[in-house]
Image (cartoon, rainbow, N blue to C red):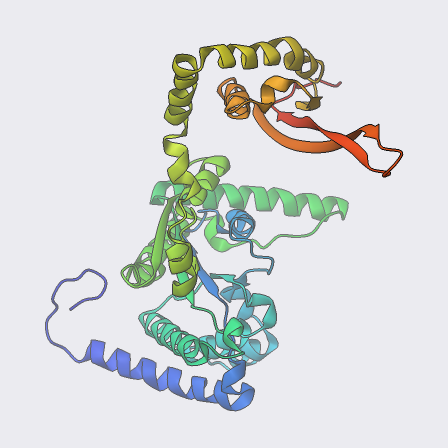
Length: 401
């Protein structure tokens, strides 16, 4: 069975050979990690986001936004930079190629750094069938560690691992156009830097200046990286993002893909404890209909009280709110007795919600001395209720020259 398309393939030794080779590559690297760090210190990121994209799709542009969306404070791991270390340069200078073994060994050690514990974006891995198989093995090992240390004092360091795949997709025409545009911008920047001595030179890629090379680079992506990531679609969480639109629209597409999913992010026992609580997205769906139903109920079942609440808002509250129209924020104290009646506070808040305001009411009970018994020294007090209301709304926009 071909894992990339689910179709049967003719019997041949290649798939089995690849899997065996992946095991041969992965096993000694893992054993070396255990021997060097100790099994209890093999603390990999809670979340790994595999970021892929066609040339010009905007990976560099969107990496910061993705990090903020996921609450990641560490820099991304970019494989091209990771493989540009002095050690890797020595391999290349000796006339050797950087193979899957070297890539995996360098990557796994990098992932063990403490700054990546909560999660990291990984750009440029996997790119080959061998790396795909090694990634599966890594996930199995991470899962084994989570289960092994579950319920122990070290459990917080071995949380349930999550691997997500995020692919920014543009078609060949758009990719070639963006690569050539980047070439023109890079050339203009470098000419200006050389002329003025200000700024820094940017890398000039041959593919950014030749349409044929740009097309070839796109096709290599489709044949290698695209297929490698697509083969993991049924194993890990897979997000395909339309990146042909504006930056703002692409960001919205990413946000839509990364909506909160408890089952994905939380430990199963944590999720089971929380799952009875509704998601905000679920309660918002019918919130407007529920508000209308309540307001109509006030008018039908409690018309006199409802009128008194509306009058209070209209005559005493709104004049103060209007004086704060620029700021969009008003703090108002009221001792009006109507608010002490049953359902009045609910009416008060719902009326503001219907009109587009956000109102919060806090009831403060203050004891006010009324009499003093000289014989016993006892002070008799009455309780005064003060309704402290915070009202927020969109304030006025002031243009300043």
